[in-house]
Image 1 (cartoon, rainbow, N blue to C red):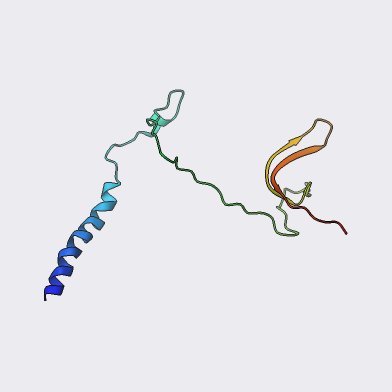
Image 2 (tube, one colour):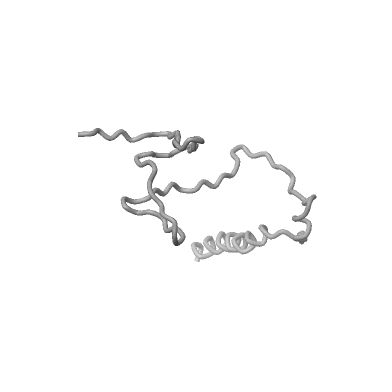
Length: 110
């Protein structure tokens, strides 16, 4: 009986908090969508963060022999292989392509 009372005394506040928590995320200010477009949109105030929130995409490379589909009449081919984490690609006016990479895999030739 004492054990049941202890668990119910702790359980009720936890359940109440769990039910109120989603309501705390609600904003009572209605936002007019027209205020967000045009030459002078209403912007939120800037906030300072210790670490800014960032959402980075995961790196996914192409598998061997795999290539994207292109529109009819176009073709696609690999210009360079073996690059890991290419940072920038620049095409010179006379045709050569320059690429800087963070890490390059060295392949020994037989």
